[in-house]
Image (tube, rainbow, N blue to C red; front, side, top):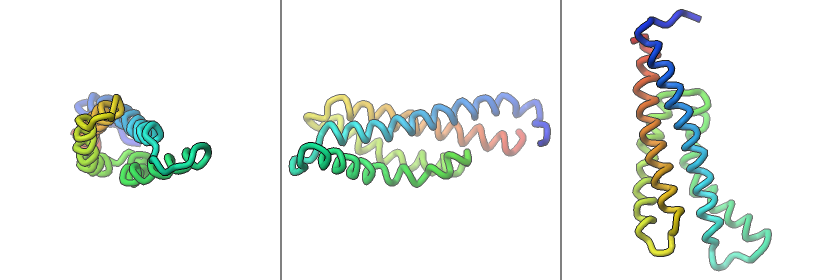
Length: 136
């Protein structure tokens, strides 16, 4: 392993912090999507086990575009983080619309906060990780 230039050392710590915030908010977004789906079950779902299976299936369908970025996030790829930042804007728009929908409750606000945290941390991680890799 090569020694990093002294100028890029602060960016290593910043990139690591942004990465941890990104992963934490990513997991929070998945949990909020699951919680929002299970708290508002479809009216045709039968109570009991089928309700849970239906809710988990719908939540997985909602989170499928997010799950495409798991390999890139595990590899700490700044390219995957930048694409995630672009894609999370769709979730942001949908969650803002959900906030103003009657009956959304706290779930809409949690989705807005999680999507904002993902967007900001992904952009910052991309910026700082590119500097670390360039040795600047």
